[in-house]
Picture 1 (cartoon, rainbow, N blue to C red):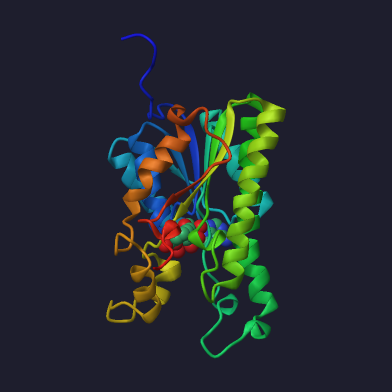
Picture 2: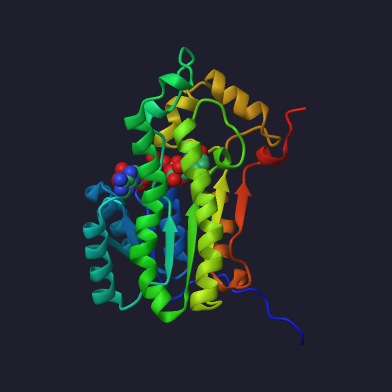
Length: 275
Ligand SMILES: NC(=O)c1ccc[n+]([C@@H]2O[C@H](COP(=O)([O-])OP(=O)(O)OC[C@H]3O[C@@H](n4cnc5c(N)ncnc54)[C@H](OP(=O)(O)O)[C@@H]3O)[C@@H](O)[C@H]2O)c1
């Protein structure tokens, strides 16, 4: 048939870096990227976890490398970049999935905003915002040089709406949304249409960094977990692999005219008024 080509979601031969690759959501992303043909660098601070996952991917016939690093350590990130360029000669894709909550930057029911701890506020901003900004500077430099690549940031529902209690995390994720739009415009104008920047805004998925907020010690919903389910039209948390459709779309040529988008994957949370 003439007049159109079907979208191509494959990532064969591409080199991908997944920060937060050792986490609950990131590890599923690593496996999916490898299954789609990409060579994947698993980046997180836990070296053993990264190595274990990379070995699992290789055992399944994929290509992956453990690249332990802290997303706030420029020298460590540059060392990972050098390793990847020496081994695979290119970097095509970046998923910025490192992030999470910081207890002191979450209001307890007894606190008001004046009680928020500045140290914790700065740490949560550092991890979520600068922990996206710095890896982008480091790993997207080779993409900019080749005018080709795709970056996907992991935002949150807390970026666009006021989710109670999580002050610092929400501000940091809102900054990621803005960075996504700003960088999309800037790199398209300076480096051409082959370099794209988008984000996924997940709804609520049970992971290490938020388990205590959503579930009690027996695995039952906390009061907050219940409020989330009540405000999610699909009436459940997400499963990590439910992020993969959006992720593979945004990383691949299937989205080649899409940049600056923040895509919700949230069971309807962001469009529900609660009424
Ligand atoms: N779960 C949800 O409902 C949800 C919703 C919206 C957005 N998100 C976002 O999704 C992303 C993944 O989170 P998750 O839910 O999968 O939580 P998770 O299982 O706790 O994973 C967090 C990841 O971040 C990494 N990380 C934390 N600090 C780091 C640092 N300084 N340097 C390098 N890596 C660091 C951790 O790796 P190491 O410990 O090995 O360093 C881990 O891989 C986060 O950005 C989170 O904010 C999650």
